[in-house]
Length: 152
Image (cartoon, rainbow, N blue to C red):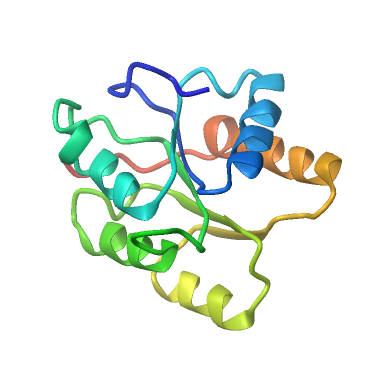
């Protein structure tokens, strides 16, 4: 499930594990939060999407996602490098990023916050708990949080 109009995106899901991605999208869909979701499978594709390059060069770069759900263990470009690039760019540094990862290592938590992540969540192992965490996370970032307007 990937929302087709990538010029109007609420959630960018950056997840290489198809099972975790499907579970996250199912949990978000159950709360009607997946209507404007794009799923990318690695860090390079995430950067292409955000900066409207490569396969996403026709996307309007000014339409940023409202939140990015970012795994850390990604092929091509890892999640910390994606975070580093996003938070170093004036156009994208204010996009809220929630790391959702299987890592529970203190160094990953510290590195993520040092780079400007807005939230760090370790993926629960149990499906029901994982679904609950993802749906609450999506609800918070889309309906409760008031995001800053990105610099365009």
